[in-house]
Amino acid sequence: MSRITRHGSHTSLAKKDFVVHLLRIENPLVRGTIAEFFSAFVFIFFVLSTQASTLFSGRRGDMLLNAVNNGIAVSIAMFVSGGVTGAFLNPAVTLAWAVIGKLRWTCCIFYSIAQFVGAFAAAAVIYVLYYDALQSFDGGHRELFGSNGTAGLYGTYPADHQTFLSSIINELVGSGILLIAVLSVSDRRNWRPDNGLFPLVNGLIIVALNLAFYGNGGVAMNPARDLSPRLFSYFSGWGEETFSLWNYQWFWIPFAMPYAGAIIGALMYEVLIEFHWSPELSHGNHNESGPPRPDEGALIQEESVTAIQPIHAFGSPVIIKDQGTQIIKSF
Image 1 (cartoon, rainbow, N blue to C red):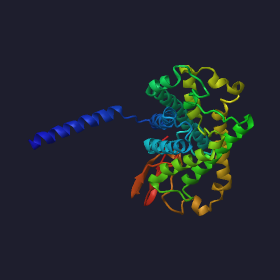
Image 2: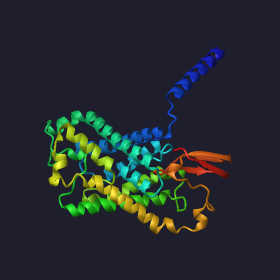
Image 3: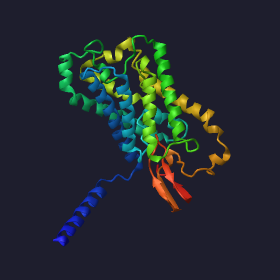
Image 4: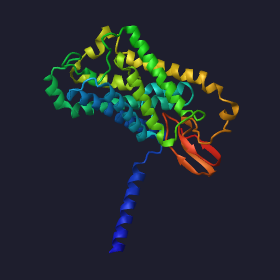
């Protein structure tokens, strides 16, 4: 009986190995693109579903609940694809990483497209998931604002007191601080957190930023988080007003300004912090647990390896080694 069971187990494993071999994608760029799509989907799913839950449960605008959830959403999404790409999740972060030379431009383009598509797919799933609740709430009459306003489920919109200029500054500062914080915890020469804590620390950064900017109606910081759900809301009943607000001068702010703010923040960190590390720290005579750059991949070949732990913080693989490491670029 045990032989039959053992034989059946071996057969099942062989079939599984065959399926894995059949489905496995060898191209690292394609693998990374799929991973970014999937993690962006997970991230936006949690963000939008919490917006819906708070609205339909009578807790619209719950600052703490939304801030904490957004941070947890980032952490979970980073765990999803951190070992593949570093879980960028955000086209603005992705672009900033490429601008400062930490990510190849080919990866930047494909990852960004995947993030926008993943966010759009998440918005569609949330619409189906909460369709009945939405119908009950507004009776099928989609409105942006007011007591029955529901467009905020998808896109970000300004607070009543905000002006055109203050909205631009809001996104620039928020996205810039985001990149400074993310780069500081990703820098192998700085006081970076231990391996598995990277997603949790990045989640705390998002919680802090959400709380810090709540008085100004929040801050997008992520073009995919705003534009993709906004596009979905445009096509699913909310109409042209999702883009025509402020005579078409609002919608591009949470889309374009995070890019500018992220680049400014990344350059500030490099100029004010990263450029000033001592040569010993910059050339490897320091704690050997630091990561290579994201575009160097995670393929490590070495004679004596203690452990390889492909946990990333927005694109920074974590490698624990003994000696004599040779990095092989994977894409």
